[in-house]
Image (cartoon, rainbow over all chains, first blue to last red; front, side):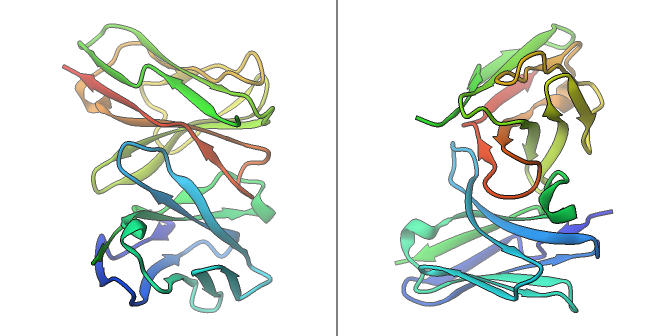
Amino acid sequence: DQQVKQNSPSLSVQEGRISILNCDYTNSMFDYFLWYKKYPAEGPTFLISISSIKDKNEDGRFTVFLNKSAKHLSLHIVPSQPGDSAVYFCAASANSGNTPLVFGKGTRLSVIA
Amino acid sequence: EAQVTQNPRYLITVTGKKLTVTCSQNMNHEYMSWYRQDPGLGLRQIYYSMNVEVTDKGDVPEGYKVSRKEKRNFPLILESPSPNQTSLYFCASSWVAGAGELFFGEGSRLTVL
């Protein structure tokens, strides 16, 4: 049973436009959520996180929104740049981050110049 | 420089020939974990360790062993590799299991013939 779902395997966006990557979860115990970015031939790197006590967290061009009632979070990238082209993984943890992360399958973002 | 180092980065082996993928971190992290990445399946956790001498199974532990005799090292052992273990493997570490930044190694691509 997949607890963290990223239903879009891929997404293409024009440079300068907004990229929206979505993630749904089923485990109501999850209370900490993270996004990781992965380039080919490299390990994933941490991008941004949000605790369940918040509904929004912003870091430069990246904003994560959390809708607890819908068990849904999204990552917004504005404006999108060609260097943002990568695979993005959504991850979740329970117990205020004291349990191992559960990852989604990832969404491949392509930003077209 | 803070890093997670995996070796080997690339390996081609044959069915049944025991192999070990080493992982070392220099950040004094308590938590370490192994993942495998397969097309369409995302990142799946194999084993994790909350601290020295403490290890637990992840989602896909079959066919793998780990040990955590010292804080910095967390080797992944394939006692009798099979072709279905052909994959891209990532080691990761952090201060706690699911919160904050999980640091990943660069990956080890393993092919079992």
